[in-house]
Image 1 (cartoon, rainbow, N blue to C red):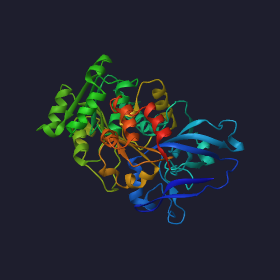
Image 2 (cartoon, helix red, strand yellow):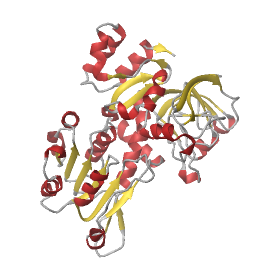
Image 3 (cartoon, rainbow, N blue to C red):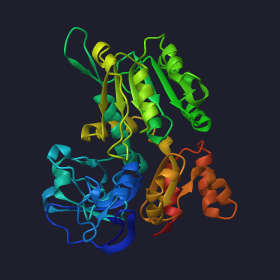
Image 4 (tube, one colour):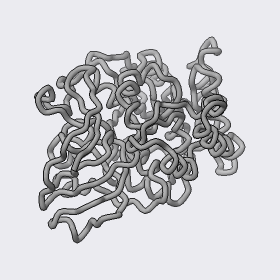
Length: 420
């Protein structure tokens, strides 16, 4: 079977190509990808090429398929897996398989599996790692977004506190505590707000900061302080660029106590140091945003580490249980990852979008891999619709839902869009 896919050959060398998939083995699964959400990690891999820790050294000869936040439909299961997987079954992928003793991952390391493809072959290791997950939702985009949401879930579970008078680590954010989400109105920050409001270990106070009024306003519309208050949570959005002393202001919001949990969603030295400065006793700083430079560093107050028990944790990706939790919360309607999506496009938009991801404003870029379509902002659909009836129809659906992507929009795109 032929597939069309975006493959990486080296630094900044991504190519959309058509090629033959090999014959399916008894321990493999043939699948069609439907959607893939682009991740900053793919941008980093594109910049670093074979120097990336997950990308093979020989990609100039044996290129791999990029994209690791994807969902689709199983077409055929090899004999080994026919008892568990069947044609027509929807799936999501957990690319992180560290528990198998490998850093290899779909979307980085394999020649025939990745999210930015029309068709793929899922290798045996993915099923052995229990990383091919059954998905029963109607829309595909939530399953694609379950991977980035699992990263958020994992970060919340990885934070910890020390039970007073013991050396016992209590995992998770502090229930009823003070939570700060710094640089928190980007796509992953929005997901973190959603999860913080609706998971079990609810804080009493959530403060979300950024330096962009328009992004803060959108976040406050998506997650209103009034709605949070009904769940017993005080939610505050704060533009720290307009405050002369942000650290003092933030600490005052906690009554001077400081924050139990701080999440940093930008790899910026000043933001990390601000997060350190607002930690309270036994406060945990979670450095979520991965830097591109291996030499990236920031100062940390070790006086407070010693006397106030402050500490830091970092997480990169989630695990399979985290993804299952995110899928379950989506199916139950507790979280809506669609708030992260601001752009949609087809497979032929992946190369330029991935390489220029830092320069494209907005949130998540969602790709439908069997469609030919330039990357389009949901907020530009009205303008495009003046001359193109396809975009006019899509705008009618999305604008009626406050420009939040939804099942009806996905169905319209898949049935009315141009196949690639």
